[in-house]
Length: 215
Image (cartoon, rainbow, N blue to C red; front, side):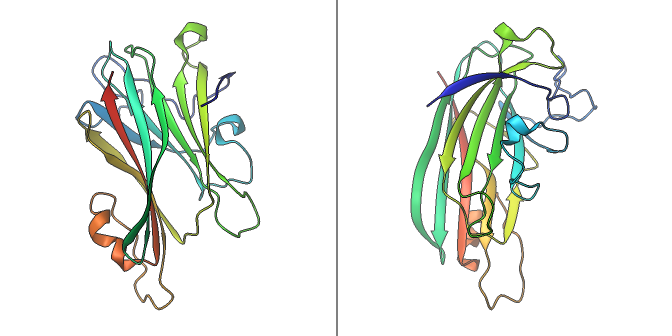
């Protein structure tokens, strides 16, 4: 796993979390030790979204807030289903956070390549954590970024987590990409909470999940 440090403008995506657990915009964070919120990518700089050939329908930013005063191991998994059968299950990354402080936040950035669309040929998943040691301005912080490559995905529909509160050691699906059957009359998006009961409805389904464990 390769880490590199960047200093960049990320005010458009960063959550500013106060002592009462609310963002600067007044949005209430979900309950649970692992607080997950999907962020709009508008205004996020190209360095974090990697390149212009990942458009808004392929890029997403999910922010994670964790309990303070501990380090955590963050594991990302991928499950791939074909005609309802699990054909691949793998660990994409295992990332250890710094000791979490009250202003700490982590972003998981998905830049998913769409198979055979003539643009990007690989997916890039990044974990960006605020580098408190080298951040002089809380509004424009420095980030430690770890990047992981994955294959392109053949998909018609994408589902992203909105908000979720989970306990430590509990899995949460962050994103799902599905390919419809050619004869499907109803092309419904998959539900992240019940995806295991729904994957049989699709030709293919790719699910990305997270699990956070205290070190």
